[in-house]
Image 1 (cartoon, rainbow, N blue to C red):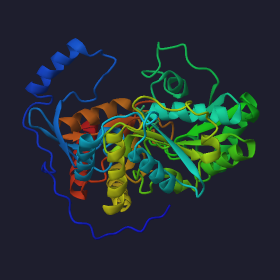
Image 2 (image 1 turned 45 degrees about the horizontal axis):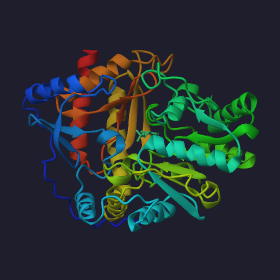
Image 3 (image 1 turned 180 degrees about the horizontal axis):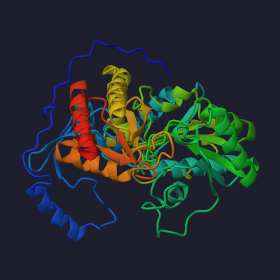
Length: 457
Ligand SMILES: *Cc1c(COP(=O)(O)O)cnc(C)c1O
């Protein structure tokens, strides 16, 4: 959908000064002490990228227990998209806490669930009757999307793409591309999952049409369209390294799915909810998915996820077949309604485009200076650089994951939290909240510049 943005927005007021500030070693002594307690009671399988323990977060800044402030370029992996502790979200959730915290929608329903479903029906691509089921996590949304597609089609096969990430439950582990750390040793895995080559312009050099022909041919030959219930795609791959497919790739896949009766599911868990300057990244590619999966950014940090799809598909599940104890919790749903309102009131789709311009320009400048930056890509506030061994940027494009870890570590010491990604761990991803100012972005970019300079010195 296209939105007219009201540019007359008053500047937000932050309870934490929007600046980085390092006052101790990183991690500081209080974080170290907490970390020791944590190691005694939390399994090592739950790891932390940067073990600084956070006491407060606001806007685009995290404050740790030692008083260090970090510019947050990760937003909890694209969750606090409209900013940490955003005022309207906090107020809506607080108010809801006093009214109703839980009833279970499948016993006695409440309005907030219905309102989120209405908003998703209006904001997801496609002008047709839709239904939404609300759940608790992204993986649960993927599970439900697949479940409904199977019921609707009477088929079993699930098609996914190389470099995909869909979650950590049993079914979604089988749908991920990367085994380590996500699935190593955790089998047996769900069957009937078929992984096809994707479009990865920096590496395959294929046009969208060529890459789509390769994907479709692979699926036709190895499974056969008649056995496929759904194709699940991230319009821009998240954990895979912000891979933006070549023009025409996704529409060709969608067209093939429609012709073959395969449910086309867009996993917009990371790319959705205004992140890319459109409500859903599908819009950039002209897609009208049969189903859209939302989670991460939908409720300002509270756990909520949704499966929104064509009424005829969604209603194929029998009464009682969908649901769960906490799905669509009233507090999370009230927060989500506030998120939708703030995206529109705050002109946040335009903010995502501003962030894209600032980040892309800054990163292209860095690419001109440092030949280990092989690729700069992404849309909106979802931008990444792919790092390669020196001298290989246009030849073998050899992954340089040590550089990525070194830059992230260097930046953390100076108060910039930046996340890594990519199947080979050689992608640095910039996924800030839409509340981040250009000033903070430029400051963070100067730290990345210094990090690159220190690496190549
Ligand atoms: C994070 C993510 C998931 C899984 O979401 P959880 O809430 O962690 O279960 C699924 N798909 C994509 C694209 C994601 O980024």
